[in-house]
Image (cartoon, rainbow, N blue to C red):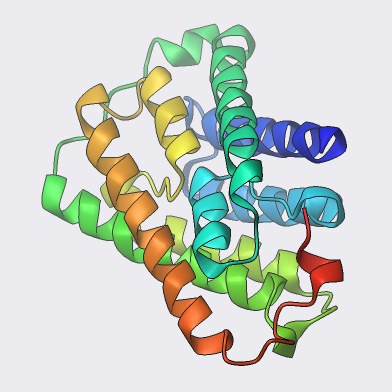
Length: 221
């Protein structure tokens, strides 16, 4: 478990560091989704064989609801992932203090923001479950690309609406750095967790009829 938690911390830390630095002025502008997609792809490949590369409490919830991860492993994952995102958020003012002074919180468009987060958190979880643990894609070498691409596509699609968090830990870090107002944090987390749970339960309902669908050697934590 120690190695898995270290991998989750490192992966989450650099995932949000990429996001935060790209968003902080002068930033990467319209290239931000591409940078995040590329960075996430590399991080997933680097950590997937160790910890399944959650980097996202919603992913942990999706795996739990899909029946592939043990309940006792959920809390350590959630804690370490959150700490990784917070640490990255605290690093950004050190790297770009002047840029931090120029940050303005996103304009409040609550219904659109929540719907965007629900839809694309579900899409992200759906892709993760189907490329990382489904029998039909077992031992594939494209899982990291698929996960990175859906995040990049979602960021291009709804980034201007919701900041394309799709991740409670990233949402918290975005609030810490001032990209999102603290007032949206509770509803973002609720929407993201519910979307992840729906994806996990739907995946389970479609695959659980085959007991060989979840090979123990691949899923055990």
